[in-house]
Image 1 (cartoon, rainbow over the protein chains, first blue to last red):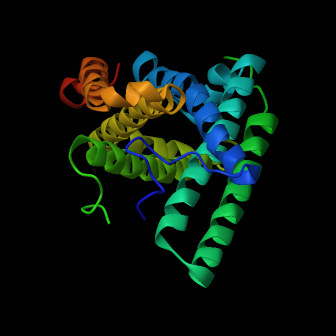
Image 2: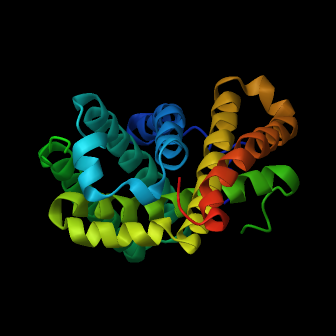
Length: 131
Length: 123
């Protein structure tokens, strides 16, 4: 296992191709998530409180603007890529051969299902006028 | 494998990054499904929201926030060192800096999340 990690993190893959692209994308999405994911957490837990964020509140307030739907969908795309590619690295570290192939296939299937469910709800939830 | 890594701060920074990352991933899976319920089954979502707003839920959300904040700060540390390798010399100091920010930002946020537990009604 030594050599795959520097003292920093995952070593930049040599040879280019998809592995190098994923390595860069992890860092690019990471910086974007630093802003979007932390803002999201502050909005949901500090500016508002979980107790008030009912389904009707989301339809009437939170998702009443295109901006916040676009914000949340961008966050969804970024986090699905970053989280699933991150877990992919973990799986590649600990599983070999057929086990690895099976876990990775299940992982990508789950990512696709979440992509569909999340995109569906953020794009189709009707806006309900307040009151 | 964990224990055979380079040891000291670098190892802990890496191990915490991996553990917090997998924890946030697990929550993301749950969270996309619960938000899907807002459209698919609003009653079920509102029921789940009761758990999120309960004392246990708030403790778990505080832990989630801690995992997210650590992962975010240490992630920036990794990126900074990836693209400016000379800074790797200061990787320990950078890690301590992460913890200073973690405590400085995390404590007030944890207080905000947990406050409704002892104040009774949520804000």
